[in-house]
Image (tube, rainbow, N blue to C red):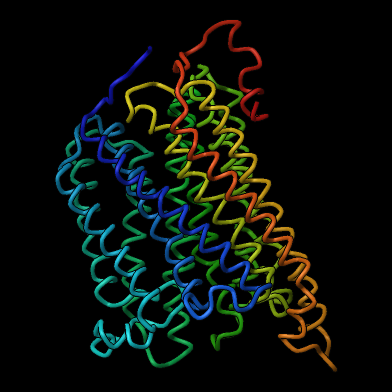
Length: 480
């Protein structure tokens, strides 16, 4: 059996973060299926897990498991890029257990304590931070997140300072520091509703359409360097151009959330123009990924990781780019805001841009964390099947939500007279909601297939050369 060891022993801490991320990802999908059923079977799990509690758990698990994935990726990537051991592996492990415990206690709190009572018990009267979508965490949890984030950033920054500085690690560090700083706006909760929503978008938008895109670019570039062997200088040039466009369009594109919340009217133009340009960096990312594959100088044995990486660029463009553009202009958003069109965009964007890039990092890193260059061909085949099953399942969900959103606009938003009421409209969308459930079940099947790949044995694949390389990438991209 061909085995390998990690270049730096401290990279091993990433394994804890990856395992936790996958466990929380699975829990998120299970709660998502429960939510989907509650759309069509209104009393499902009621009163034990009402819709508002399930939704908080679903969205909070999404954020937490992606943060675990980002942190694990950084702990694996930074030592290798810096060519030195992690500054403090013990600190990384301590922060892991703190973060995991805080996240678990928060989820338990959501499920067993009424939210108003939870706010009272956790000191929300001292500093009011609860009650906002995605930022429902109690004050102690938010403070714990800040402590974990600052400790994590200290560890990563010190590792980079004592080692080699590369474009990938610098872009990653910039994105991670931006993520940490933007979260501080979650403590700003003014009584003025306009200012409240503005600061709220400073966290939510400038995370997912700003700093997280830098993290995405760095992780994707790292996986492509490792799996294609393309010159670092070539990838660096692409990376700089992509993040420049991402920052320019992402920061000013925040204006598409300011359309109708009471801010000046010029945001209609600023938001429309720059958010319409937001697909550009994602399209560039797609071209970048395929360009790197075409120029590859090696055929890495871990073809599953390459599939996840290429999938990130394509599905990320579709979800964050195309589906975002569909309803980003103010004149269109006036009708679609808050409809199922928004949900369709959100699901596909998160899956394509962030879920897939974390899975790409896990797919590349986990074999080396387990002492091999790549998994067996059988295990990789299961991984590639899981990619297609999850992606098709997500596609079914997104198309169903898009159809539901269009019908919702037609029945409820566009008529100037005799518009259908909200609940009456929901009754007309049941077919789409059942279709979404079918896509969700398919997605869960793909996730379980992915998890099963970790338990499939066999002889690890070794690196090929010469004529053996012919057609191998094509086979991977087809999920053979």
